[in-house]
Length: 351
Ligand code: SF4
Image (tube, rainbow, N blue to C red; front, side):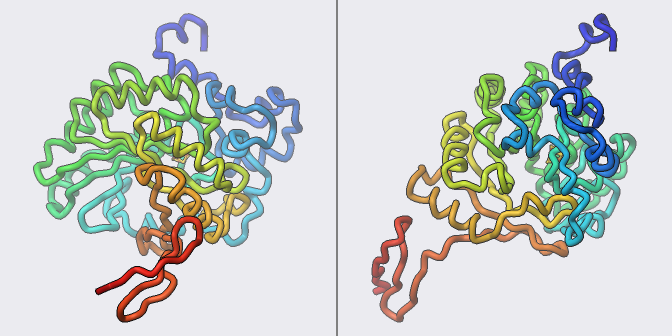
């Protein structure tokens, strides 16, 4: 892109245009060999925008692991392309209808950064969002049980402001759809996306909730703080989602720092997700016992508002269930024995 073309487009788009997308670019930037990475990128696309790239301190650090392809992605025999059976619960292209009252609308397959652990590795980067909206709105209009629409993807904030505004307006016009929710990683991976215009689009679509995907305290910068401040000041309720990832955040102290920081930014920790068994992500997998230990560490050491639910999405499309550390040690007719966050036990009388 020429300099004059770059100066006429929004900053976030200019940054996106400068993303690393090839093994050669990655090799040039980090001085590493490209030959092992090219086949990985051929199977699972790469996009690392210059902002997120600037957060990498050294090869192998938690930011690097999330963004830079790893040959291990091609060495995962047990992983499945679609372990949650999303395609089987899709009544029209780009819509997942698993729970009676909620749907997930895949607004785009594009993202500001292609996370190496993505649960939708099978589709991100492969298509552009075009003419699906009519079929989606038609399905939602004739399905009154749907009360909430979750916009996901890909990243819905990759849509232009006008396109996003029209999409939200059409969803808002369906009388039985009471709530809109957006799941986005862009306030974290490319916070320059949170422009005044975007904030206005979101304000116009209220009640609308925004869940932002953060995985590591190293992702919280002054840009991110400013983006979250603008969103919170505009009255958009903010939550966070985090994926439990080996070598990134499978450490109680790291998770503690992340949740504390998010709370201070008025982003309420909502979910920690156990990684789905998606093909190409085995090297990120953390044992469930480790996740429970992290949750137990958070409980009692941080405000209850800062303790997210630890969720596992059941393979085969069974839906999400919360995993909770064992606080009930024993049940007797007249009392229960309960364990507190320090591991001490207490009798709780039932009568
Ligand atoms: S931003 Fe979300 S949808 Fe896009 S690659 Fe990352 S995890 Fe997947």
